[in-house]
Image (tube, rainbow, N blue to C red):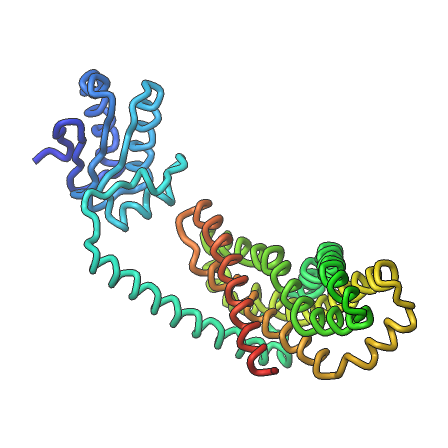
Length: 365
């Protein structure tokens, strides 16, 4: 049997496409180019292709680009996972997943089972990763071997200092709007002073740590996921292992420590700025004196409120970091995989932060 044959508008490849027969493949397509142009579309069936090297991928790229100039749509169908990975790695073209069409679709129960298997596999990997990060996080405090010098300070600036403006602005607006919406109702009952209770407790117990975590998940969590995903796809993490370095200690620990230190400080900052927004409404719209506002806040707030805020910030910091690292390490599929991992990281981190906030709320209250 020849290595290449036409079946209707489909070119079927057999055995292998390597440097030995890449030229023959191009000549075969060129000889049948006139009939391909008449059909207006073209598919390359790789179901029977067992091996392919970089020269074979380059030959397929050349055929796709040549036909594209003639406005002929070309699809690659039935590529095995091994062949598809080779195409993704060696291809000079931006091949989307749609170009790897498969004629056979999974049945309902097959798809359900596959999703269930992937879910439990991801849960197991997440637990192992969390345990690994916790272990090295504790060990790394006492042993700096294998860690990048000065990286903790760099990450602290990126995660903590860099987030101050946006956290401050959002927190002030949250406190301002929350007070403004409540002020009318309180004033109608002559309960102006209770605006202090509302804003002080809501900012310290809920809004401060929650809004800070959501902002950091979108800002720094996405950065962690995209950086590690890029390192995974470009095989930099494998290079670190080859050099005898643990990627968790070398890449992840500085981010984990920086997040652990920065989140409580940012949360306290958010609490103060949010209360300042309520303070502005209290002394302008509700005509409270600054002294009355401060005295009432000192009587209302208790140590438990501040501890609650800080404990939540620690939990959220670890969740955001673990989720970002998890999706970064699970990334695959080139540049598109980095984008998908980053998006999934932000969505999952925000979801887990809200769930954790609900659980901690039940435990504390």
